[in-house]
Image (cartoon, rainbow, N blue to C red; front, side):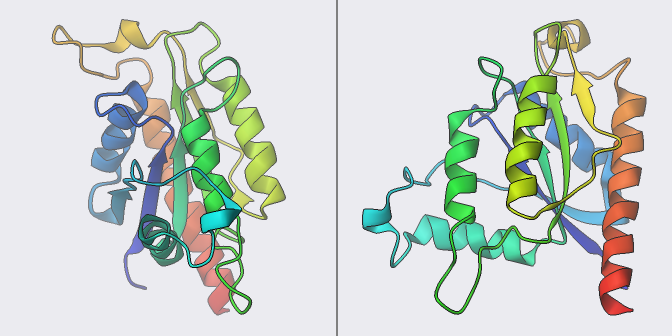
Length: 191
């Protein structure tokens, strides 16, 4: 079996966001067990049916990256008890059929969810909302384990960068579980 491909989608566009740093920590943990890539999507326009066909080049690019991935790992902050609008906008584009002959690209994709926040409740509410949406879009959601990290500032180093302490073992467990989850789905498709 060739190396699986995991595409990380971070729900914040800020270059030094805690969730982007969490995704980069996950990439290190995954190591050579899978190809792990962060999706860059800050050039995606607002979803608008007036520009849907033909899709903007940025939308075509992210659709191709999603199609090439064996699994999608979401890393989402929580804004006002919900996931960010930029993530919703991206998912709205990805949820649309590519053409009359090609369906939307998220259906059937294995998905995992993690999130870190400065709040006491972490990102549990935004994750629940995200699960509702991606389940509706027929993604294959790995609900256990999910990773919710509260109090992000307590896990920063002296330079203000994320240095997971108490949460590192949970991220390691989730990474291993997600790789197994994807591999099992791929075996089932082949068998």
